[in-house]
Picture 1 (tube, rainbow, N blue to C red):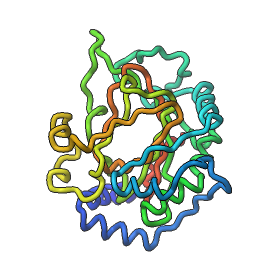
Picture 2: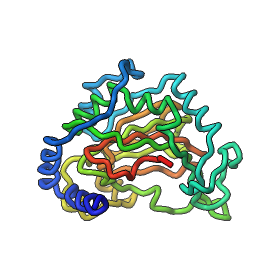
Picture 3: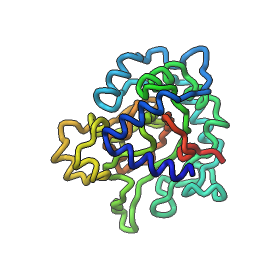
Picture 4: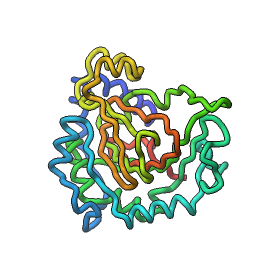
Length: 275
């Protein structure tokens, strides 16, 4: 039943009027048992500015991990094994992995980041984060999960980049409405696979956008050139994003480590890394 509900939600979310009605309906009955910390770990985070930018553009930059939080998360990543291709029976330490994965398309991700890393839990239960998400969704949000993963260069035997849908523009339909928070855990410049977002495509979807959940770079550059934002940043820098916007990850020439949190109206159990 839950899978069917998710499929129905995905269809509704594409149609502007139905999406708005459904959000209002769920908002009336939404409840959250998400406990909050007494103090924020983001003292400089401006709630009103962040909320205004997310509403207007679909994203907001400027959230920053403290050096202590960043160090704690990196220590977690160093001493815990990663799953190879999300197979929980096939694990290794990231220190055993070369800068180029042993096989094309290999993904390295951690499990139980929320359960086993206190720094991740502190971020998930931060009162400022919660306030921004609650106001953006318009109801008490559900924390649906955290994830940490490494992105590696995808090269063929000739050392050439492989074309893959993983690095193409698309928008997510995880729920009727949802919000993600991303943190770069190592320095990310244009050579290390920065995230790219097409701002102001998270609101009403026009007919073209309803029919085309994925875009080629050529179409994106032609239709949305002035709205494209490439997000680079130092280790610990982060951003809020409604990934109902068109967005993509770019192909890294060096490995990148990313932390993601997601809050939504409904929790379908698809976004956590629990083992």
